[in-house]
Image 1 (tube, rainbow, N blue to C red):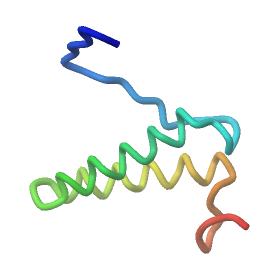
Image 2: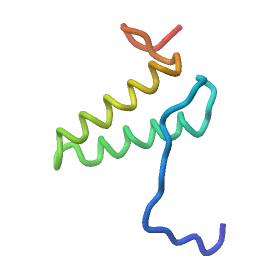
Image 3: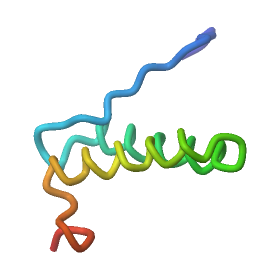
Length: 69
């Protein structure tokens, strides 16, 4: 997209199915952002990772012990 110049980019980590590529990419983005700011704001980083994990679990990608089989 030529000329795309944004100040904000909205992501949606919630999905109803495990195969939603946009939700999966959003959760990856949450984790990447959390990693990048962890030393500056550990509490925010922790909460973002917890949110991404919650959405993975609800989409059936995680169970109580880790990645779903």
